[in-house]
Length: 294
Image (tube, rainbow, N blue to C red; front, side, top):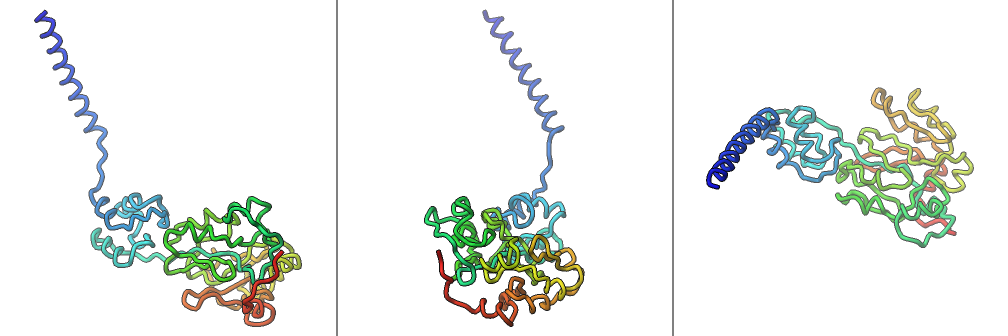
């Protein structure tokens, strides 16, 4: 009896020693070193977990900064002082990252766009879009039920008096949430230097588009003629800007001046959005009352 107990005890000791040796070897062979600076950078980040920097979360961004793949300035949510602190901690240059903001490709508020049916269901854009595309005459237009404003964690979007979302560029972090939530796919992320913008997504032909929204693009091609060669082209009844060429040539506000509806606009971070100052476009943009609804 005693010998059996001793044998079992010796076996357990030997087994424990063998397992300990195996674990020690495995720990040495499989050990993954993590730079302690990652924790330091992560602690200095705002922990918004928004993905605006191009990686999924603050810790992956900290890893990218430590590895040299990202500069501290790529975090657009953090303050300039916060990014400078990270740069000093890492002993690197803060870098320069142009601010990117969300922009809405629709100017069809209630004062210029017609509502053909009254929607009385759940008051969200996604719900309205699921019911025959919503009540708006333009199938591509903003429904104005504020899903984008509700989802924005940074209070960078508010709804104006005409039911259109307005992006506050200083607060926008390019987190992408408004792009994901919009059922009409109207938002895109643009560098603030891209000031020329088509505020329309309608693919209807000219007269039909203008019947539903007075600031719709009618594919008249005047902006194509007035813009630098190749910058704008008409695709499926809509003016489309080639933003790859935008960065290579000098672009000014000339293409907006002859737009008959004001669909193509010039965006200035300080002065706001401007349209054609003549003709129908000027009259429409100055209207304050809503159009008749169904």
